Length: 97
Image 1 (cartoon, one colour):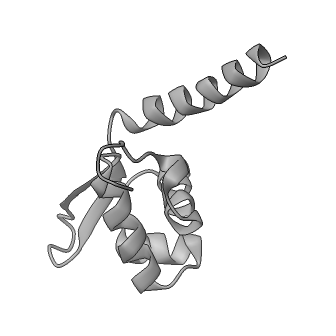
Image 2 (cartoon, rainbow, N blue to C red; image 1 turned 180 degrees about the vertical axis):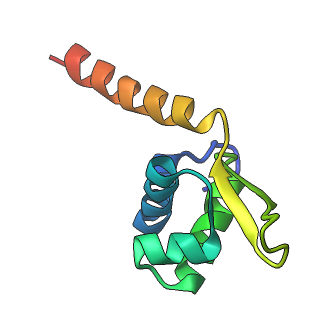
């Protein structure tokens, strides 16, 4: 990307999409929790979280039960962005006929 286009969930690698879905289904989790649920490596989860944070659909907070860890959760706008993208794809498919 040349930096002029806004990156979306569709542009991310499959691992980031999986992490998004894990957070969508399970709610806020630590990195360790995401690793366990997704069965991805810790390094892959870290990279996926970086990408998701970069497009503003994942927030990182302090995990009060263990301050050495962070808690990751979808932002309030994340489901809206994902739904708008899905609806946009349907509209294009129906109007192309």
